[in-house]
Figure 1 (cartoon, rainbow, N blue to C red):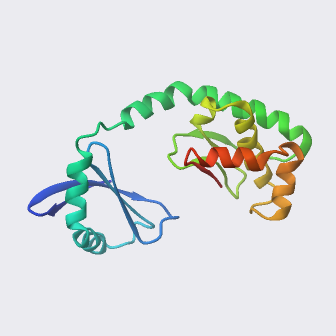
Figure 2 (spheres, rainbow, N blue to C red):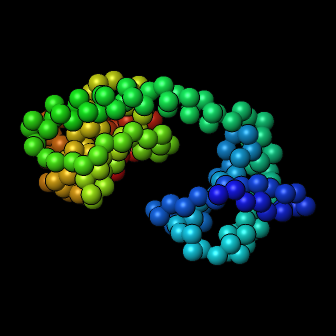
Length: 188
């Protein structure tokens, strides 16, 4: 949802996003000077959001000025997502089918998303989601991501039981996980 706030006499456009995992109000400035404010719920009053932004007014103005000189790469990411989405879906389906021979779990849907911070996720409804960038990873990393989410169908946590399930088919998961963390995306 697009909004505008006046800071230091300048109208600053920003995008308001809702993410139930966000605690409080979170703000980020992206290349191109794009301002994004994320809150937990639509019910957070606009006055609180604006108060938060006014408290950070100097920081926002300075950060927008610095980031405006860099190209907004989101367009390129959207094109890349479109290019690799189907490939990623095919890879996820094939690897899920292969590894499920050993687990025999059931899932509902598989989706491919353009996520900035996650390689994959599993919902309590049994929906599995994967980042399109799995199409760009080496096979051992893809296998770990797929098995990780597949095992969440049985253990919806990161307990010892969960990790034992993962280790059944990806015994070197710790080193793969460490390598993936270098890419700054995570798995839930």
